Amino acid sequence: MNSKKISFAFISLALFCLIAGLCFGATGTFQYINPSFLKQELSFQQIRPLHVFLVTQFIWCAASGGLYYYLTVINNKLYSNVLGGIHFFLQLFCILAAVIDFFGNRFSGREYLEFPLSLSFMMIAGWVCCLVNFIGTIRSRPERYSISTWSWLTGILFFIITLTESSLWSLHHFNDNIVRDVTIQWKALGSMVGAWNMLIYGSAIRTFDRKIMDISFG
Image 1 (cartoon, helix red, strand yellow):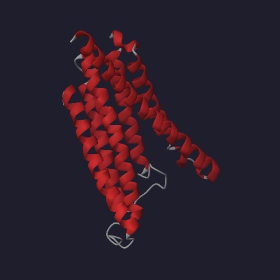
Image 2 (tube, rainbow, N blue to C red):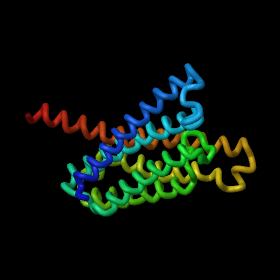
Image 3 (cartoon, rainbow, N blue to C red):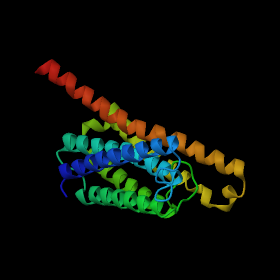
Image 4 (cartoon, rainbow, N blue to C red):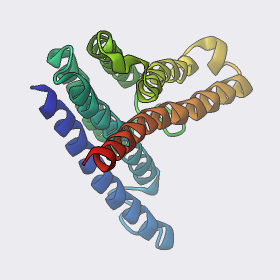
């Protein structure tokens, strides 16, 4: 998988997640109006996490696609297409596995991140690959000092930190105390929103810079 295909793959996966998430969201709306609608086949307890998870994955994958696209613009190619491919296929596997688990009523019990704990570790591994790829790609480029570059780097680092932090509920020290458990979950989730915002802002700043260049220099 070459550099451009990695970006295209993430964007395509993001659009798939968006469409599927909207479909499950619409189904959940009908179930809210008519609780008996598909109650036996697919309950609201399954629909809600499916909708939330897939829409969240739309944001993650779209942000990743934008990141990989602009990395190829900066350096013509990625530091490692293999690492980019691993990141994509780990994310794809986690999305499919989580959806299957939700259909099978297998939940972790966490808000917004209801998928089994093992999938969190796979996602973390994917973002570690992304971090290595990112640093390897921009380390010899003058753009490494740009605002967008620092925004991307912050977003990647905080994705790794917050995904790890959101898994602390599995430790006895946290799950033995409901206040401590809920506090760490919501703190991690709030920071995670900041992480994906930094990835989005990095791409938005880069897009804006290129648009200004087009206007200024034709």
